[in-house]
Length: 268
Ligand SMILES: Nc1ncnc2c1ncn2[C@@H]1O[C@H](COP(=O)(O)OP(=O)(O)O)[C@@H](O)[C@H]1O
Ligand SMILES: [Mg+2]
Image (cartoon, rainbow, N blue to C red; front, side):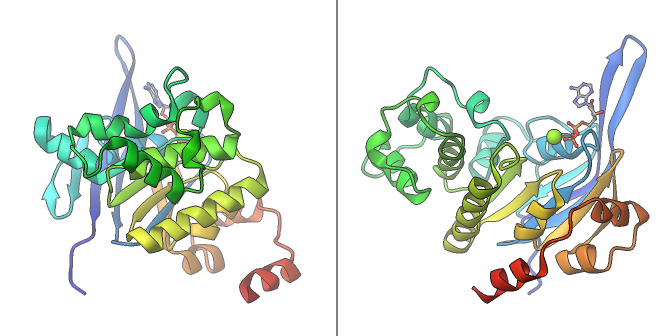
């Protein structure tokens, strides 16, 4: 297939002003592609620039330099209607489900917020779409009148996913979306994300400082260090034959997976 990638980032740079005469370059020129129906994992230690990269890719902040293309269109400096259209195609799920969901809004209000922003009229009404979206992520649609605090961490993250999906995006950016969850809940949410990818033809940018998590979901992996991508490639290339010293040291720090557990996972 010769179709262009869904998202293409070329040499994205981001500076932050840190004082009257000082600027900090948090991201120093990163380039990557996200293919359709694929997951690009981004790993790296805290402070390496993962979230800043995610925020540029989602157009929550503007790059200082560089190019962002979505579906073959240059969206780097788009605003107004073009930006709203972009937001219909790209949604974000953040780390802390409670702080990223308005506590005074019911789940129905939370999930339908992107629809309102898009100004979309939906067939059968907003309530029906919200209930469908809740069912899709494994939440009881009868609970749409409850508040985020009434849900467990895993359920609250499902609310965040339902909110992202309600506008039927092509790309979902998950920034440490499962990092705050217990391992068993994490596994359930990762399963959900994989099912959604298959059923809805989604692409993901999946960011985590935890390599073991990225390994479970990513097709391609980019490794970030100090604002740069030091290595990127297929999951196999990165995890089985890392070339960069930094990737090797990250992998060496991960506790080894029990081989019998790995065999059981692959068997079923
Ligand atoms: N708004 C900001 N102002 C100043 N520095 C920032 C800002 N946002 C992020 N940074 C800095 O940029 C670097 C990268 O941060 P971030 O992208 O959040 O990394 P990560 O998500 O990998 O932990 C860090 O040193 C952080 O302190
Ligand atoms: Mg971060």
